[in-house]
Image (cartoon, rainbow, N blue to C red; front, side):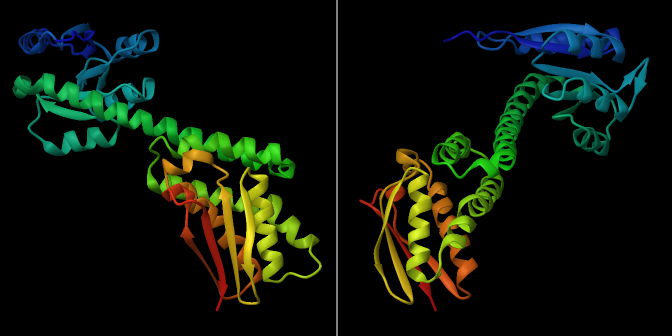
Length: 298
């Protein structure tokens, strides 16, 4: 069985008897896989100093300290190290206090008479905080990519500029961003592609009909690195065939990228035609041999 590194704990508790009980509970729970390295401080000011100077896996926090009491203690510790999970230790048999502590930033709370489940509460709090931190990183990276796209959209007429920024953003969509964040980012990218290329190409066209629309959409997809062409067109319908996907094999890992292509088509088509539908008949992302996108006016 593999041996994991000790879980580093900052215990913020000013009552010596409670310190003994916590250490005893952790000692009983230690195994070959889980051990605990506990550092004890008795004041909030000392806890904040330690959090600024060192890294801990979890904070065990009493709410009744000599220099701080109640939920403000949680707020202060969370502000000092928002990425470190906090487990509040309380002697109050009041569930509302625990709920309020979690609303202030704690991952969990535990009544002091329940030290027998302390080790489990610590491990769960650490895992939950890891997931929160991962989501923060993904969302922050998505926002940074969007901000960069906004900042540079005036320069996105060149293929290399546009493809570089969007290609940098694609892996972020594949790292498990929450669906609502991925969908929002897709909408933002569609907006910027429409502003940077779609409006420009449509403005250059002398006549905007179904054939022009298909040609503009193919040109945009090809500038993104794809290989798209009009397969057939009439006054009511244009069928576009994609022989190569702008996103390469990454589209097969996440069909959200197919929805990005559909979003680009739908956004521009709706600017020209009042009643229009865009359907994906086949997609390379779904392991078809090509993409077939149908634009239909009804």
